[in-house]
Length: 323
Image (cartoon, rainbow, N blue to C red; front, side, top):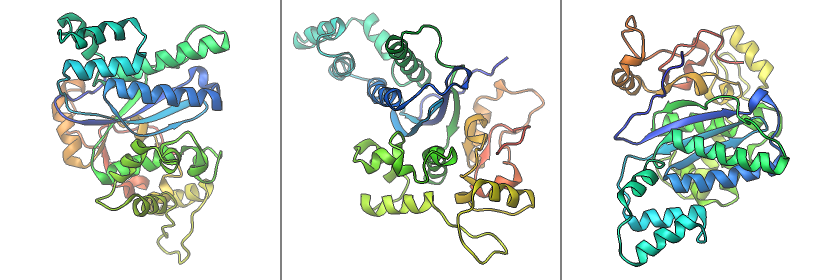
């Protein structure tokens, strides 16, 4: 039986979400990725969540989503969200606009229905995937499910150190897959869109560093993406390929985060939560009823080979956690 999704309430929470195409099929070409990207931004604006990073691959999608602390929307802002999302000519948009212009309140039942769709990671992913599935099936003349299973989510501590690691891991997906050597050349990730000038993506990267202009911070983030950290006992500092990295780990070497992020690491999708020990322990105490009675603590150290990533996990992975 699957564990119910962990969704803390009353505070800002960031999730790394992964959704996979049914059967692992490579169904998303450039046109489909662009459609998903467009729907993603529209859905995020409607639901009131922030996209802190993303990468749309051919058979799966990574999203780093920040859900803000619960806040009350007044009627005017609610009408603006609905009108922007559905269009001014939509029947619901017209009805709400008429109420707004007449200074009449939105009926409580209707307002509650709309607000229930906002500020929730499950609703955001469900509606985004449903809208994309409808578009995809319509354009491809197909029917049936498009997505393999419910999306996976891992809570990410919203501090710069952890967010930096996870953001880079997401942006480096096309590099690990061998599609490009530089994520700036992959147009369907947050880093490339930030370089293209999208304000939301630039703000997300700038939030990873204390201060400074975009030009300076983008250089620092790029340096991290291509971190050429040295290995103990080695004088040369260079970026190794995946096979070299795995060989070094097999012989017990401790590698930099820059090297480790060239691997597929299951903690990012299956770890339940990532962050410093106090953060993970706090989540464990809040959701302790989801775990077995035998378990007495929350924080689980990562595989020793991955210890240089600098955080712990809420779930201990039995299978090899990297490849």
